[in-house]
Length: 460
Image 1: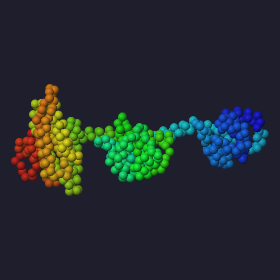
Image 2: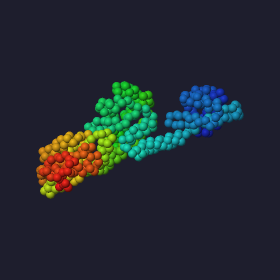
Image 3: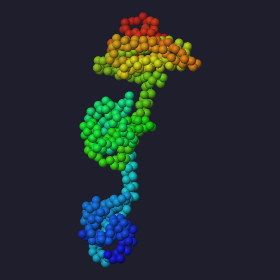
Image 4: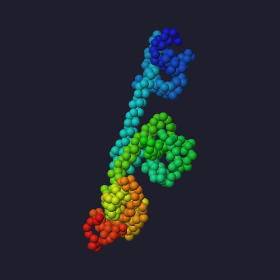
């Protein structure tokens, strides 16, 4: 190879190699030398034999044979990306034959810019698709299933689950796709608590070797699993489980996608939490923490519809604190508020989770007892009344002194459908029965009777 040729090619600072029609190396410049590691013995060799082209042999062959200038062939070398561009040169006084000249154009910056754009587009797509689920859904409970489906689609997962903390630090399944029903039972029974809670931020990755340590995962056929703790403001909101029944390579790109999914799901969960808190406040009495009158009316209408549809029954107990005005007058409103709070605690302890307890008025409370007949409701009401009579209400007066307030309650009981199948009539009946209890000496519970009562009018 002549000095003239070397000097000619070295005038260009991008890698260049000259190849014959049968793909033999004829010439190259210093830039190609530093890129490919070619040496003085390289001329005459098949260009495809250079180690730098070991993953591009097929593409390089098609490029040289087809002479298709529109074809894009990229060489990834270390941290750089080169696009191979081909030109054909007719025979001349330099090479004396028809040759192919390959230019290696460094497109790293453009490829990185494209990757960054794709990454940002992907982030925007994931964030919008997950966030819009919460906005579009009218029922917060439906959100969990929609979120899980979107996460599985975005990350190409065949298995998924959303698990959140429940009472007593246990876990419950809010949504699952792909797992068997045994997954729900295992979570609700606490068998997977230790396994799931062991995940630390940002995620826990379980490959095949680690999965084989867990019998449950083996039975489910899981070969790849990631557990993402969902945290917002230092609060643990739940866990996102994503997996496959096929082996999967965990790389930086997948880690980025999972991390992005986890961050956006955490934000949506935080919105759900705030939404539920606002919803709770809208139906809750601020002083006692019980439901307010608005929520009670809604629950009452639903219970009446259930009676009509399923031939069920329920009872209402309207309770009033006897001589509550005297408590406020003698001990002050701070003591009166404390009496209301203690009574609310007694009611909560005395009733089932399915029962509705609401603060109905100033010192009035109302109970809705599903699937409860009149006689059973009377037993429950009197048990509460006796508990209140035995309770020592320790209060702080407005002067800052500790006082003991004696408290009793009276109440009226009515049942649907035995008495009425109408909200207004049922409430009126409970009110009349309570007034009768007041008139008969207080500290008692009275069943509503349809026959005329000697006691008519309001109560004190």
